[in-house]
Image (spheres, rainbow, N blue to C red):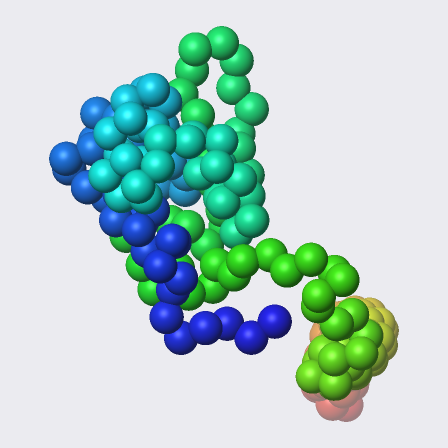
Length: 191
């Protein structure tokens, strides 16, 4: 469903009421700013609703909230009424335009018949397929990399081993060379 550029009047009015210092003892934001609380339902009905909506029917106000996708948090006893919507946030009036009135399924075409929905759905499926392909390639590369690391470690081990053998052979050659040199010197001196 396309979003409007401006928020609905009802939503703007609710946002203004919740932000109003005049009503802060009656209605306010939760501490997190992700929901609002009607602290005193009776005063809210008789004062806030009457001044802003020209009626005092809290049930009607709640039904209107429900039509925009608000949910009531479950509370027990005399606790305040608390309502939330993912796009109704403190200090985020820019998100209000995203709150859309629910449309009954009989008046609204099925998403499958909406060409833009089908186009977006096809794009999402294509992207999911691309993501899966990329994940498979990453897995292949990780396996190839692990193999190369093992080969590299084996080559390093063999190189280290060859260097040790070379040093050992050089040492033996030195000993043999010294022995031969000393032997020749001794042979020459005895003549």
